[in-house]
Image (tube, rainbow, N blue to C red; front, side, top):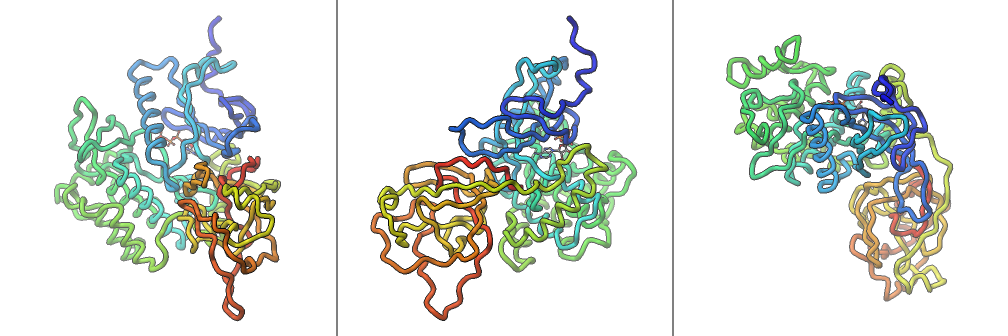
Length: 486
Ligand SMILES: Nc1ncnc2c1ncn2[C@@H]1O[C@H](COP(=O)(O)OP(=O)(O)OP(=O)(O)O)[C@@H](O)[C@H]1O
């Protein structure tokens, strides 16, 4: 029997099973892939905590010419390799990858590569089209820069940085994505297939020879693309290079690279960002090389004069509401799905705190030395300055409404490791623990803030208590079926 002709064009219906996941909606399609929103189909009781929602990137290979199929397999390999080796809160997380076998009623998906990714709320392209709020621009650039700094430090070049590949969490956090062209450096270069997006090619890429391994790229190619993205963020998506088509703009890039034309940026780009973008857009690899992602990030941090840019702190959630709204506004126009909506609040559930220190589990009294800290921000180092005043103890029951899979890695005293964190609600009457001697056996494990914040003396200011905080997943042995927070 011949396969249905149109199975290729039809998107997967809601409820369609792909591995452990059930499709909920179509998010969008690229040149070689289709991305779906999905929910975990069922959760075995012994499953390790993981997000209940994800994005499935499905790359069909059936019926393609061997060269194209190879290209897709290679693209998936790069994504998986990078996800495995260079995970970071500023990079979209890869949760799983597999090859589809015998998909019911979908012969065209036989052998398709599936990437299960952390699900974002939208892309920077969509936000630029909707209008980026002035107050968010610097933070978004800092987030991109932070992701690039991590990639470059880890020895990778993204090679396809553009607003479509900068995803945004529902809280506005930046996540670089689409590592299908990402390449690991061998010495000073990496090699990519002759693909990419013309509008983000640096001048030297237009002349780069295509060798057996592909085209040579260096981290400065990402820095050039960052310069274009910075300009787009301030100039409503406009490129600094004139031309009606990508090829025409490419010609302008080359003229600038050869010193035949000046760099002309839109007046809307403010002086600090203009200077930064101009450094990113230095005309040659050599003149651009001093402007590394790390040095650009340091300049941005100094300019912002506040804490290092990075994952959004809880205070940023106020702005997040705006971002989610802005993204929602364009959802109807661009997608036939609800994927740009912030996740609806989940029904809270409870989890019981577990202290890996046996001596503490056997202590009925709530001595300070056996207390455990709850983080203010799960993506920042779990140190004393990043914990709320409220402490918790073994067997305490906390209410949680969501979790994140890629926070700080925490290793407990029994060597359980996890980057998962649960968002928990603090009781309204939370107070610091009563004084008492620390339990001698309760020394903190690596990565744990010392449970020793002394209660404030009478008359001293008490740190104000937020209403939520974060419990590392290793501090419970229960698996709460709560959704991914962002
Ligand atoms: N993890 C994710 N969460 C939410 N949306 C995503 C995720 N990954 C991709 N998307 C969205 O899915 C759509 C298709 O993405 P895909 O990577 O297949 O193609 P593209 O980046 O648009 O194009 P191409 O990679 O072919 O140049 C895009 O709108 C993208 O923003």
